[in-house]
Image: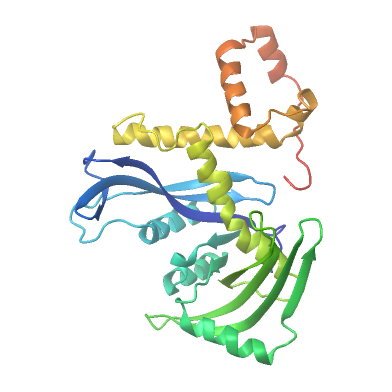
Length: 326
């Protein structure tokens, strides 16, 4: 299995990017509440995520009503099937571990990952895959060795983990899947209350779970999924990138802007976490947003001579990342 050194961890999640009070194109998704209809656009994004905060866009699938004859709207799950096919075609040999939310805990997703040779960590909710939840509660009592406590004194957290292996799951299409189910009870001091608080997380996976990898799977395979939202979508929406701002009403131009935004965010992360910036500005910039504004002003005002550009292109340059960022 599955240490992070063997697999690239890819978080796949959807988010809304544009919202309108009136229909703005034929591809709009619609949502009606209390008689009021909202028209919006969403994307399903696959990002490589890392413990240091990297959230690098790998592939995008737009969620939109392209088939005007369809009886159902496009959705995240349908977009995943398209994205998975493209992802395998583009990176046929890349070893991936997909980290997904509970929406994707179903037979077709399990089958796709098995056929493509991918590993997965999918959130297991209490109301989903009832047989898997029952096996966790029943079999874990018979397997006391499948438990482990992980303490991180630096972060002040304790994780109590338990798991069961070789759970047989039969999906609605009579497809049989061999799964592994694990639970993590994380206890730490609450920021607002100052008291010890415990949160519960559960996942279903196709990774063989054992004492030697259970902590890594929980943290760098399961919990790390939140980075696609925090370091990914949240930064792009609230960190000066303007992801949700309608700069254009033209559907094609909006997609072009989205891809340019992803490129800008990748460049910003590489600069922020690379070694060169720390050499010239050891004190930092205060925040990632401030760094973005400094880069913008540099593009506007700083100019390089032809000689300087030629020197850069003909110089040998190496950018290093720390152990955490690499």
